Image (cartoon, rainbow, N blue to C red; front, side, top):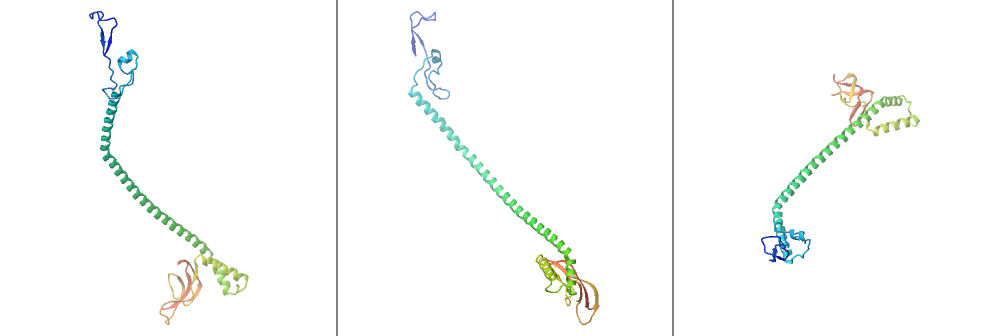
Length: 229
């Protein structure tokens, strides 16, 4: 409270009687507990003066802020279950994605195996077509041997031998010889001779040898057989 001895403006107050006015000097805002800066009160704004902050008010503001922070810390404890639930949700999501990754890896491995198997089949089919196209050449080579046109030690004999070795490295095999047991899966009988001295049909004549590639018959052997009627 301050004393004001200025000329009275109130006509009902006797002249010369001191006039009193009240100024809110509290440095702590009672509404939110914050410290008011100097000159924040209405009276100070009107007079344009600045007064020092009371240390007691500052301490009271600190205590108010500490109490407010304590309330916020209490609320953080309530959020702990929510955080735990979020962690559990994320762990479940990680497990789900890990299982999905394992399934996709297994599918990739199976798909790769199928592709490799299909590529191998395609490769063998292409090789088989090339070898099948060269079989007539091998027939001519065999006929040349039988007629003595490809004698051992001649250049043609060396060329024919290298050709057969190269084709053999790709799985080409010749089959069909006199005396072998007749197999309808490998041989094609073009003629037959009845004979009672054998229990099963055997090859008596090889007209054309057969060729196979890795157990795949490219051409059956064309033969003559003899055996039971």
